[in-house]
Image (cartoon, rainbow, N blue to C red; front, top):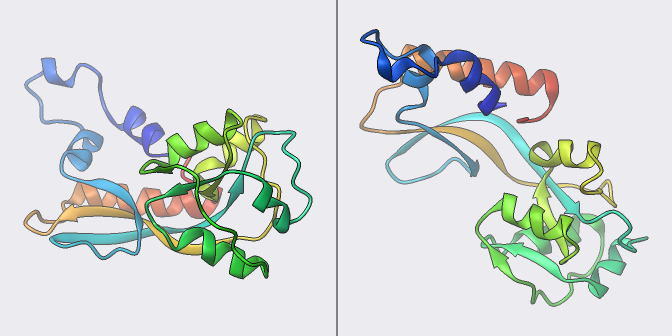
Length: 180
């Protein structure tokens, strides 16, 4: 979603012009979006949407019930509470977690799509991978441990461009249910 906005709102030749940067470029210059609880030191966080998480894996992975996950490598993020919280929501005991730890949902998704294990990923970020057949979502159970946020350093003010971007992201995510 953010990439589509940026492409629509910016001019690829803006650096070659003397005109002010387009709205999208001004809005994105000192911000980022993040997944978490919205509490970061020195950061003003503006909620965009919740990020429910669920297991994703390569099509054809043998998973009939959540208990079957104990036979697979569970790919992990640095947030140690994610798999235990998901298993609790699914009503199952969390197996020993020994799979690799990555600090990237994209990386975890790539490993899962390549058959290296099962990744617990934010649904809004990976819906298109399910639609394309790259990943499957074997279970409907989700757990929400964080949200997507537009973040701005506290020493910067929230510009009109950022307000416009935030409003657009909230409206688009409520309409589409994802950040694609």
